[in-house]
Image (cartoon, rainbow, N blue to C red):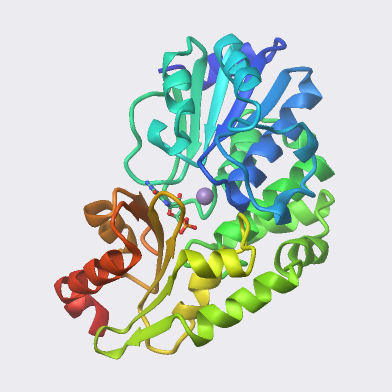
Length: 336
Ligand code: 5GP
Ligand code: MN
């Protein structure tokens, strides 16, 4: 493992740097990646953000977005950059299978690998680790990495601040989840002082739906929602035909699970969607209920206690049934 002093020494010279983040990046994945990108380019590093897949349009206004390389669309360019990198920053994930085929390329690369993350149980593929499961977002860790480890608070400019604000806002569900401490609010205040226009960011992310997306949400809530009162659990199960009917694109399904969780008394909510090749699950929970445990144990996934995800190769109906059969195991936690 590299120590911080050696890392600072390396970063004193221009480096070829790749920043990458998890499959289907969300607001924290892109906010932390582009926040770090906008920091590093001020120091003359040759820096590229490479995402394993595409990501929602509502993130495309983030400063630096135009320079992002999407692996599935520019595969050979991305592979060349990874092979030639001096350093690879791995943000908001901690296992190489979270970046799909890119995982093998990053694993093989001789670059110094730096993991900055807040997920449980990191895999050992890194040379330097800045990891804290108590952080509400990886973007929070990018902020403290720059200010406390690199001692470079002065380089948090408007672009960096805008990206980091977005990451913290989205991963903390607009500052509502338990990890949103007073320290997080102090960081947020500082990001606003450095130029993040908070009301504009909320508008770009949350008041930017297409008409189709809103109509799709309508169907999810009226036709696809099932409440299992016995288990304080709500499920929204969406067949592929709905996605096709409403032209659902990447990002349109984001956040819908929270409507199911917003029902009084509901402790666990599942958004289960039939994608092309497999069924994807997004779980959310209130309080102590470990949504990540279900994803890890039964759906090849993981995540945080209150927000987790996974996949299954079964049919939509099979996965919904499997999910319902798991609930009795957790009944005590769900009804207390
Ligand atoms: P979402 O439900 O928004 O896709 O993901 C919620 C949380 O669970 C995120 O923190 C994400 O990193 C994690 N997560 C989602 N899908 C997977 C998965 O397939 N594997 C793992 N390990 N984590 C996932
Ligand atoms: Mn995150």
